[in-house]
Length: 104
Ligand code: FES
Image (cartoon, rainbow, N blue to C red; front, top):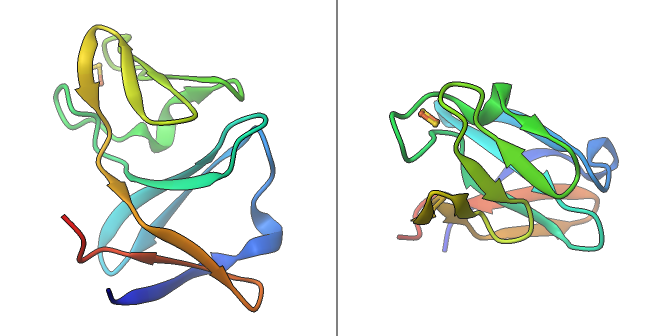
């Protein structure tokens, strides 16, 4: 595990998505209503369009490129089924959000 700093915890809000760049990789941190903040690769598994410009309503993330839909709580696709966003481990240490890009 090699956690790196991403942002301050206080910029994360429940029900919102925060895009960020970490070591040259575009990441989204998605905090679904009633869940916990989770970090994902921003590349949509369909055609790799960035989900940083997706439409997140606190429960569902829509890829605006071709309309794929993802569950905000676990990154699994709902439409079509059978896909998932690549997730990275996330932790919060002393008010700083950190993720581990090395995990596969
Ligand atoms: S790139 Fe996201 S639905 Fe096509």
